Length: 275
Ligand SMILES: Nc1ncnc2c1ncn2[C@@H]1O[C@H](COP(=O)(O)OP(=O)(O)OP(=O)(O)O)[C@@H](O)[C@H]1O
Ligand SMILES: [Mg+2]
Figure (cartoon, protein in one colour):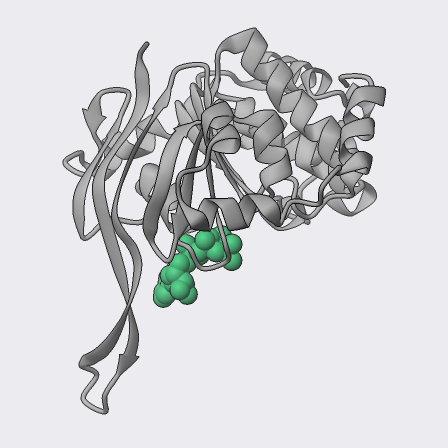
């Protein structure tokens, strides 16, 4: 198996308090010595309670944040040693989607423009060819081409997340960091968006770093899981193994907090068409 993302012993702290002279007096140790890999065509979930350091890890994976120490290799290259120009170039191969799709889209741009933007930045496509690519991307995420001229406020949350996914897909990424991508959506819509992400993975062997606090979703969606608590890895391994035989009491407590049957989520997923 090929690793698309290798994170080795990353550490990150933020200044929490400064004194009157502006000198840091207190730090938040957001991420303490965290390591994991994401294999090609697979999904690794990072789970843990609020403040565990999940988003900070996701941001460091793409060098949107720089670790204090440790190494991050994307597609075999050490991104911490790379020039910012080269890191920017890598953004066409590794990108991110966020919890709130409304905030990730410019409200003043019609969605066709929003989806075209990464194509302008990272590809040679222009004019008619670019428009055709936008149409293809919108169809791929289950939207109609004639919706291209509409503004974000004219869409539902689930549709907006599809548009954000279309935008993320524009440059043909090999890795997508998904930070709570469905947490803001209704349960039935969550299933649709996750099905879409799974279909895309089956089609193009995309890898996901899937950040979530929802263990029921992680169980359905991720191949591997890393459980975090207060910046540290509690345990890490194949999802089936962690769910069947959690070795740490923290993981057991997290798992026992999953609503037992989760009937709405499961039936929603089974009954809904994949798009
Ligand atoms: N830019 C920042 N400046 C200061 N502190 C930060 C910054 N970003 C994160 N932190 C702190 O680092 C810790 C980890 O934050 P992070 O956002 O990574 O957690 P999380 O696991 O994503 O939480 P949530 O589930 O609530 O999204 C928190 O204590 C947070 O307050
Ligand atoms: Mg977060």
